[in-house]
Length: 114
Image (cartoon, rainbow, N blue to C red; front, side, top):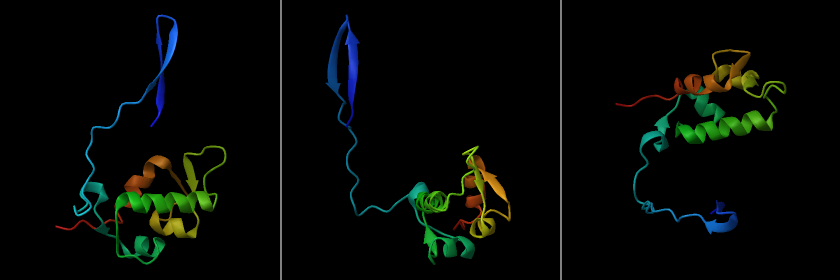
């Protein structure tokens, strides 16, 4: 938890952050929404290490780890990602993609069921 400085009538007091009122989620519940694992395209599955399904946050996490680990961000404009051969397969053969495009391009690799 973080603490907050409060200034009242020229005096500084340090107050503890309020405790969260959210209850813990039972471990036997199924993930829903974006946390729910979905089937992925063969290209994304291969990129993620041979998996057949993944949640969106997990896929994005691994994608960013790959981008940062291989130093693929443009040093001048960090919002641009310079695609190598693996990323070109995922991002429609583009040389560069912006931070905002990643979600749109990645969503094409999640197969909607139902």
